[in-house]
Length: 201
Image (tube, rainbow, N blue to C red; front, top):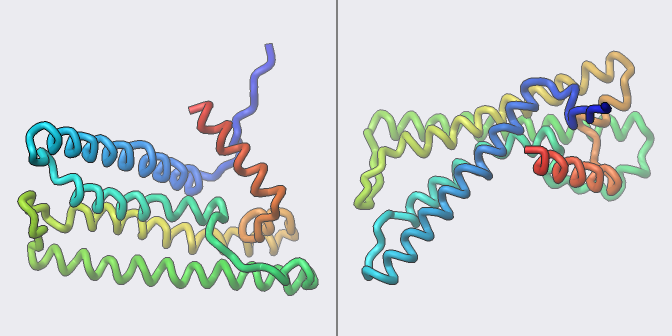
């Protein structure tokens, strides 16, 4: 009996962890947010008041989901890039542009992680709480948010390092896989693989 091969047989553990965090953000955080909003809508209809602070909690959930999902965008090259003229350039210049784009993203990711840690540290030192009736300690949502951004920064650093290693080994295809721009066919294949993975899970 034939067995199907795994969809991502050679996926390194950092990329796999990024995928898991993205699934957690989408499946658990956003679904939980939808449940809270539903409860609030129903209780407001029947009892003229909300039972949970869904507006506040959904804001925290959205920030957490964005933070936890950003590393996955790096591994999937899902961030927006303007590469109108890239295909017309020689391969060496195209590789340099791809690497420069990846390093630019690294700089932004590290800056985000650094400054959000400052915000988290300030909230911790002040014992900051939300002004709502929940009085949520701000270090809780900000902590989850920062964990996602920190991992985003880690992946943004790791990907260009892996790409340069592939280039030094004369693995141009591997380099393109790590930091090259997605072509239309690549995006179609990626969407198909994601759909198949969702069905498998």
